[in-house]
Length: 341
Ligand SMILES: Nc1ncnc2c1ncn2[C@@H]1O[C@H](COP(=O)(O)OP(=O)(O)OP(=O)(O)O)[C@@H](O)[C@H]1O
Image (cartoon, rainbow, N blue to C red; front, side):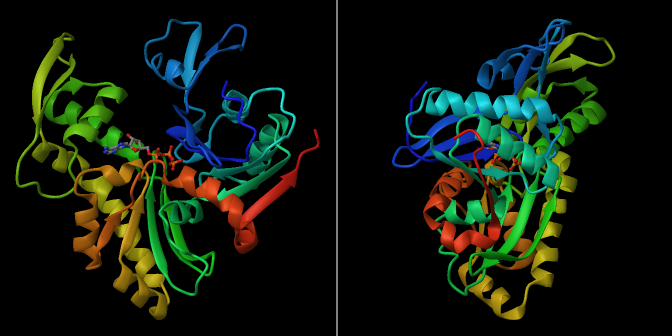
């Protein structure tokens, strides 16, 4: 327990939850995974400890990801996970309850937003605010979004990729697709099964994506030794996979993201499009780190693409910082006072 009394910003992501405390920076970064005992419905582990259990649990224990594909797939577990992380960060007995701002995946419904607000209030917030993901990403990337100037942000997370044009503190044009980091992993799993007759797990696929994943031609090829199970013999095998193969495996998924960026640019008013063309496109989120994805989007749009510093913690940082500029963001935040003050 850190016992932080200051206001906090939370990036409630499908892959991970990050907490940003005012004056302290990122104080918590854990996978969005919960392990429960099916018989008692008790939570056994949350975050990193629960992630280690994914795919390795005995019958009575399930390790689940309560947010999947950018939506809350398990409402109750999301609430319990959020409460656990908030209490771990702020401590249980607070003299001064903090203001908490939560950034939710863009696909969540009004009912799910309400659930997040209630869980945050119950976990000890004096006031809870919700913010849209692309706005938080833009603030976290250090953009001044208060001016009448167009910025394009492409946030590629675990479950969703959000593409938005922002001006005067609001979203002008945007799209959100359920193709992001998780889909990259699924494509790699599918490729390994089809091409090599080898079954690999989600964690191996993610390691391959991070180490040799490729979205654009690499001059120097990279290789990785991969362990899996041969689907014919049923036995464990080792195989060397190249980055060129990853480019083939990921082609369809990365093209879907480039298509989304293209479609938003097509719908962008000309003045804002010319701002974006001068300043470039900013990429945030863990998925933005896939090798060559920036180059692919650059080639497709003819506009320079920059990957934000600390791409993974950008949304959390922006969420925390947004607490200072709520007056500018009024149109983009929902808020609710705690009933438990
Ligand atoms: N170096 C890397 N190369 C490629 N992908 C990466 C890298 N590092 C992290 N990722 C991927 O980034 C994704 C997580 O990104 P992030 O933490 O921004 O998502 P999130 O905010 O939890 O999800 P969402 O925004 O969809 O709710 C995961 O799929 C992870 O595998």
